[in-house]
Image 1 (cartoon, rainbow, N blue to C red):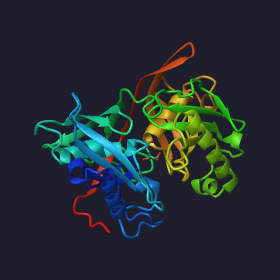
Image 2: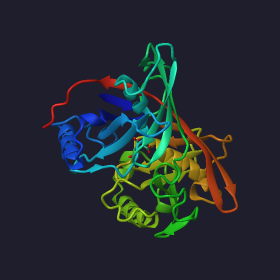
Image 3: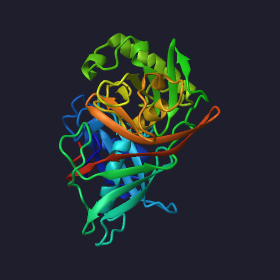
Image 4: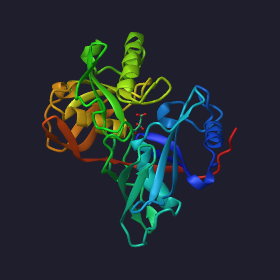
Amino acid sequence: MVLRGGSSKGLYFVRDDLPTDDGARDDLLLRIMGSPDERQIDGLGGAHPLTSKVAVVGQSARPAIDVDYQFLQIGVAEPLVSDRQNCGNLLAGVGPFAIERGLVDVGTEATEVRVRIHMVNTATTAVAAVPVADGAPVYDGNTAISGVPGTAAAIRLEFDDIAGGSTGALLPTGAPVDTIDGVACTLIDNGMPVVVMRADALGVGGHESCDELESNTALRTRLESIRLEAGRRMGLGDVRDTTIPKLTLVAEPVDGGQLSTRTFIPHRCHDAIGVLGAVSVATAALLPGTPAAEVARPGSAGRVVLEHPTGLFEAAVSVTIAGDVATVDRAGIVRTARKLMDGDAFAR
Ligand code: NQM
């Protein structure tokens, strides 16, 4: 099935329909997506990292969990399939897909189902509140999310334990601020490992278009060198061929939010911002003395509104700070998803 999940789009598979051997599975998925090829012309991929994604969903054997969700990033021009990162946008489609495929029981009377999801990539949990009618997901609704035209039904996602999912700790180096190549950075993992830096520390404003930032070769070279060192410091090893950590440049807000963001995922500039990436950046903004906190405008408790290239992203995050230790109390967001097609894919 093809679903839009949040501001991404991907192919959703039932785990049992794919080869059990990872090598055979990856080979099949590359052929289905049409990779490697810049245009993915001979496959179903959308020629951008945000539309070259796969969700693998299966019934869970874990207590109090309905389904397991594994995210796979499929390379566009490279023959790579990676399970190193999670994806909070495709996560939005997991509840509806699980209901569509009968992996979750829904009574005919229910108007909402809470689907408990084990996120395999980070071994963490999300609960998706999915609107339903007559035992099926409801896709139509009044909720707009930026980066997606029109409106659709809201899916609330709540996260219990996402801090340190990829690196073991919210602040994997133990400090809220590290300096790499003379640039103050927050190396943070509240669901997604991200390097958060002030745009002005890199000689840009932080409000530029993605095209402008992507064509700044000096900036991109410097960002990649910072990323490689940040990956080592975050315990991720050599991150040359992985899509984590992400990089977010922050600046003063100009559009009604609390913080302006431009995010590299990690080589292309995101049209908006990733879900778990946004939760991590919002958390950084709540830690005093960090580059994000320096430029953020104060907001209401438990809520951080991030500006990004195509609008606003609201994250519900609250943090308790005791001495040097920051603990995340709560994290959640609202997304939408939509079934786009269901059928047979013909692999190359
Ligand atoms: O951060 C893009 C996206 C993502 C990932 C990326 C995501 C997340 O927008 O949870 O959703 O950072 O590669 O789909």
